[in-house]
Image (cartoon, rainbow, N blue to C red; front, side):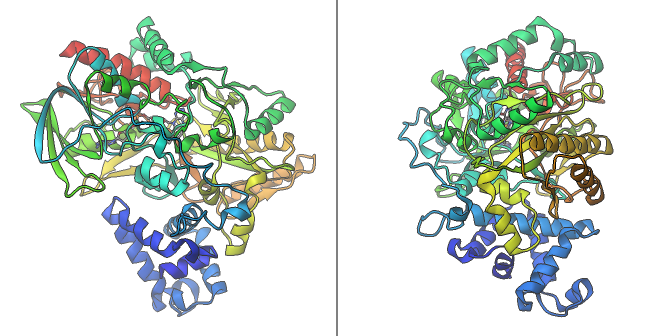
Length: 640
Ligand SMILES: Cc1cc2nc3c(=O)[nH]c(=O)nc-3n(C[C@H](O)[C@H](O)[C@H](O)COP(=O)(O)OP(=O)(O)OC[C@H]3O[C@@H](n4cnc5c(N)ncnc54)[C@H](O)[C@@H]3O)c2cc1C
């Protein structure tokens, strides 16, 4: 059945053993209910009765001709029934992404890349020595420490570094593995499964939102694009005023921003534009719209062709991830960093957090080990999806827990350019535009560009037939994009299933959808002004136009976008920034943590990551997370 699906979506799947990859991927999905749902779907596709009802053909899917299968799946892509669109998306995403990112069994380059003009890895990784030796667990057991930190990303890394600097005995537990420059193979499939949560296939429950987040020692800071905006003054004032958190406007918070900026070497000097940025700047200039160089947390960034591979880990070690900065500081001061270790539960005794229970699962290990860490303080920093899930699994009961999840929903407009852009190359991102950042009380959208490798392109390119998808993919090297990052006002929610796995529910509100729609329309103008020959959005059917110098084609296209809709699985959306699901606030009714990052009503339990944002930040969040974590470290140390 999976082989039949693979052959329907792409040709040549056997060369990379696509059906085997599909089986492995489905088997590795963290939620049992997702695995069961796919199994049911596959049975459904083989059912004669169901196919008679759904497609007017009493043949099992595997017995249909290729043309029949294409028609069958194509009808699901734009079905009015949300469940069919969801099923189509799930299958299309897995089949196309795995096909364009897999390695052949013999390690040869993926045969599909030649047609894309995509070179794959830029040679072998450097032989950079490992500067950290993770603390190794060889048996079930218990460790003691002052502070145990769960998660090692932007928040957890800073807390660990700052507390170790104060002489405290720190243990960091990270569910991902430890990889350094020598492991950054540039193979997209391998990178997604090693460094990204859920192998890069994590989504909201309805599959409408692709959720990209790092999961490795260093968390999101290892894979992120180095953009390091300070918390905007207007947002600081808003959080102080509307959430009763006056510290955001104080010199103390400014000092925290200064300290983390200094440690990361944040600069606007590393601004050599990629070809994507060049196109965006050309368009913005010709429209007379705002743009500026991005502040970036890098030291010695080469800003060359390889920088587009930054999302797979930075080989030159220029990206100032927590792995290179705060975690290294913590390690050098004696902190124990334990990887491949999933924290299942916070242990609360007599109302106070006293430690955590975890499972250590080394990829090559003989068996999983049970680890308990007893501590005077527990800091949860698993990110905005996993932190609320861990607190929910641990029995924390607060009305706001898991709610208000903000995602900065990201859309994009793609443009076919006259010359090669090679959108996977060049400085990862170096320029942005705030022309529409404040459309309504600080809500609006930013323009940025991001590197586009085959997986992202395979997700974006609509699938109407195997040939049409393959032909559109072949335009990758001449394609540029303008990404639209919406500051979302209405949130989603994280809950847990019966096994304690997080479930992400998120529906774009009409308010936020209006900003997204406007963003796509304005981004199209930028690409048009930049000289794009054809412009399209990642809707479920090809939605594009060819500019002719007048507004007419664009207006007709915008009207068609409205007809196609912005609902779940009608347009492809992704989130790179998850926030606010354990938000900070002045009381336990509306917030999860106090202004000092302690979980309301549970002494000894703290949260220090993006989940503590009161709302979405409107700017790429890393530096804000770090500044808040920096300040949290002071409060936690004072509490001990
Ligand atoms: C591709 C990409 C590009 C990005 N680019 C930028 C950018 O340029 N600028 C910017 O500001 N932001 C960027 N971001 C976002 C930024 O990286 C994140 O917002 C930030 O890393 C979040 O920090 P955090 O501490 O909340 O969580 P994370 O950094 O995600 O860290 C959480 C860590 O906790 C671990 N964990 C979770 N649960 C458990 C558990 N139960 N037990 C043990 N460990 C656990 C996870 O494996 C993970 O490593 C980008 C993100 C991505 C994915």
